[in-house]
Amino acid sequence: MDFVTLNDGNQIPAVGFGVFMIPNDGSTYQAVTAALKSGYRHIDTAAAYFNESEVGKAVRDSGIPREDIFVTSKLWLQDYGYEAAKLGIETSLKNLGLDYMDLYLLHQPYGDVAGAWRALEEAKAAGKIKSIGVSNMTPKIFHEFVPQFVTKPAVNQVECNPFFQQKELRGIMAQDNIHLEAYFPLGHGDEKLLTHPVIAALAEKYHKNAGQIVLRFEVQEGFIVLPKSVNPERIAGNLDLFDFALTETEMEQMRALDTGRGTHDPEAPGVAEMLLSNYKVHD
Image 1 (tube, rainbow, N blue to C red):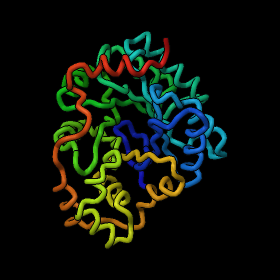
Image 2: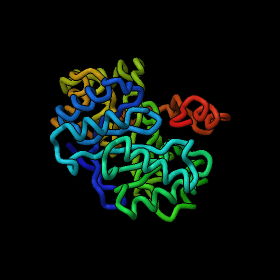
Image 3: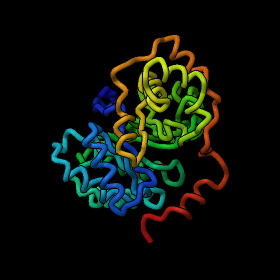
């Protein structure tokens, strides 16, 4: 496993296991258990994934020392604002059944972002959170909020894959050594990506599958990647990235696949309202 050193000095495994859309009916527990057995030491959940409790149970039951597993969760929009965020942080800790979280993010960039961020800074100072960050911040949204923060985010978790490489955003974040975490790193199963001739040729050369080529490119590019699966074989395969490396010429071929467009636009009108109406973490 490769590790990335964040701007606060903490280290994060470059490949994490995402649990978005895995139900809290035993499925998340089974998937996280399989991931940990396969060698993952970085699990990414959120209040709005509604499966923090099964993530925490899998971590506690794993037999792996707590300090060896990097656990991320995220604050939902309903709990933005300083006082509400303090309660949201405590709720995540309670749901996880853990004494601290390694990373906690503002899940969406709307509403009282500044107030919520102050609560994250305070929880970090108290040792309840090791690192703090943001998510879904475009360059425009980043410039709107981050200059207000006393503490710079350690990460910005955004949609990112070879078709949408977030080059402008990465340039802005690099000024403060803020790392990009990639969700949908495999293009959310986009067949056009996974069957692209450049990727297919590299897969044949290195005796890997298309997903492994994509993830290897992203890790070499410095991204923290969060592939998700409930298939034990695929879970293990998505971590099998560290016995080969792409050449600089091959990296350039992969960089050339960028279209500059993703599937989610955080700046689109009505996004905050849609998210709040569709995801309610409490009444």
